[in-house]
Image (cartoon, rainbow, N blue to C red; front, side, top):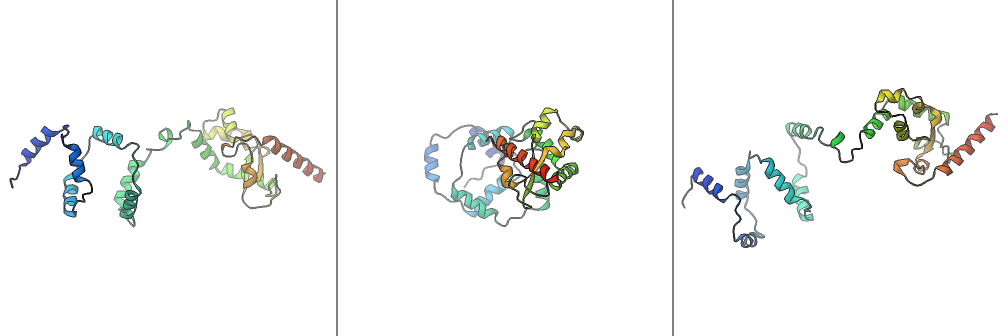
Length: 229
């Protein structure tokens, strides 16, 4: 068997680059169902080791695989191959570095102009936790709709949190801290999780339950005033 030099192999590779064999379909059929030996797999792996693909090649590969779904058999093989696999610290650091900032902020698929990040920052403040505590203490840790005591209690904004941020054009945490209405306990009401889900602003709930909610709240407020008098 004639052994080709590296230079000869390179020339053949350059000559065949971009050309599609005329018998491509026959080659596909002849290779269908064939399993590579472990030795062949190792050779392919070593030949590809350290090879860097160009951006153009990466783009072509991405487009060719777009919309393709792996079979359940393939997914099962991947799961079994990764089962119990532990990454080295170096590998983990590389993964973290490559993903840092990649899917956050304006690069995220559900980016909405930064309002979500600001909302989360404000709700994470000690001032917000203090506001929640004051609302619940005022309501004796009782749901103001169904009178359930304790459990999974939450504080509902009568004037929605997002609406206040938009109304007062609040874009920073400092602006939020200076907005008095945002921290007014009269704008909060203690509800259990079930009753909170019935409000019109809970997780973008579009059902119009606010008139009923207002009626219950106003009615219970009047009863409390009568008892206090």
